[in-house]
Image 1 (cartoon, rainbow, N blue to C red):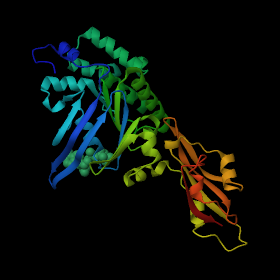
Image 2: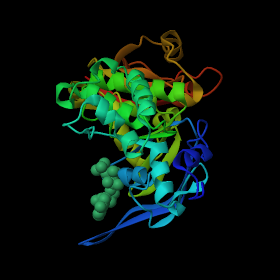
Image 3: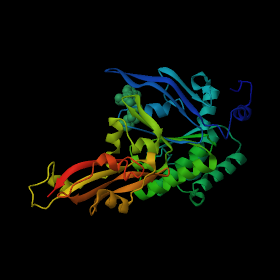
Image 4: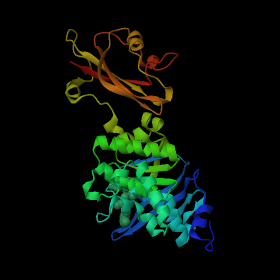
Length: 369
Ligand SMILES: Nc1ncnc2c1ncn2[C@@H]1O[C@H](COP(=O)(O)OP(=O)(O)OP(=O)(O)O)[C@@H](O)[C@H]1O
């Protein structure tokens, strides 16, 4: 860390800059003292976030996501353990060190947190004004940040005249104006419509790739994680439930909490068919269809090959429902197929193993009359 004798500009220069952005949690715990007794929000969190990653944190409501995110810029102090940013235990920072940390760790919020009485330009300039950055440099940096988010033309406008997506772009520009190495995103797209969400996610991805900024985001929208994150951490009751590359965690969720969170992304059997599903085939002579669920997880890079599926099952196959996404280059998804219940099936296990598996996992759901 910079010594207190250094001028602010020197102190910042002494910190690792581009290429930085690593976060390490060491046996982190957080207990809140509330009127109704202590609340253990985080427990035993040990984890590394590598520089330049897009890192998602998910979990049910109250799992500890915000608490964890807010320890990275010391908006929350851990009760146990440590947070290191580029190797520095941030609990040891003095007041000036904390100011420098907050310049290196930008943050954006669900409701943007813009000052309505100030123009776009003044909102973005605020962190530099507070830091006493000279006027000429402030101008250059604000213009640079506004151009990064595509809002140069709106510099004189007040926030109430902007759309939600434009407001979030201002929030992003304000976070980028201090040239951070880490950007914390607290439900950054949750207040936006799907189309605007897509444009903000594309912007975040671009910022990550172009500037190498580590992005750490919490969201309740699993599609956001699937769209932009490299890695995902699942929290459950303040502990790590699982953690890994998105394709792996989403493809083969190991924890109940993850499976529950991912349910909206799954291609479930449509309700009308579910209502008609029965465990056993009807008596001979009643036409019915056997429903199979074929799962594709990123691990094998398998993609559904309809000719191979028909050949392996030795009968006509009808696609009922489903879809396959690609996450980080890995196929992942589910297909629901219908076969004639009267025709025999080969052992399902043989279809998922051997040299030519047709899916990662196959399950018989039942019969539909
Ligand atoms: N300031 C506080 N005082 C007391 N308890 C708190 C405080 N902040 C959070 N908590 C509690 O800590 C636990 C974790 O909260 P946190 O907000 O980190 O979870 P979260 O996963 O972000 O939840 P959500 O998705 O609902 O925002 C919850 O039980 C919450 O009620």
